[in-house]
Length: 138
View 1 (cartoon, rainbow, N blue to C red):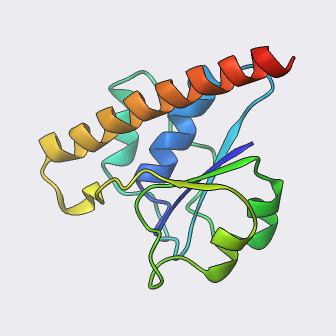
View 2 (view 1 turned 90 degrees about the horizontal axis):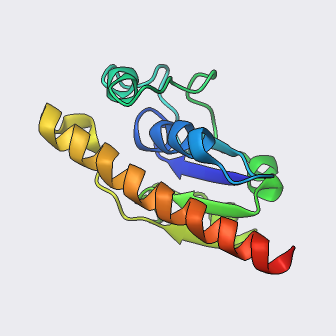
C-alpha cells in the first residue's frame, strides 16, 4: 500500500489517493490521511477530480495513525515534512518521500488545478516505477 499524507487530508492527499487507485499497478492500492484532518474535504477537491472522471475516496478526511504508517510499503507526504505538521512517528517507521507540493486550498481555481495536475504527473511516475520494480522482483 502507498499512503499519501498531508496536513488536512482534504485536497492533495485525497486527490493522490483517488488518482493512484485509478491506475494502480497490480497488487498496489493507496490510502490517505492527515496529521490534523479537516472535518470535510476541500469543496474544490471533488470537482477537480470529476473533471478527470474520478471520484473522491469513500472516506472523510482521516487522522494519520502509526498503524496506517506501519501498513504502508511507501509513505508519500505532500509537503508537510516539518516538525510543526508531522508527528515524529511518521519519519521513524519507514521510507518517506516528500513531494513538496504547495497547499492549494487558498489558491485560485487555476492554481488548484495546477497542483492537481502535478499530482497526476507524479502519481503516473510512481505507478511506472512500482510497475517496473514489481516486474524486476517478480
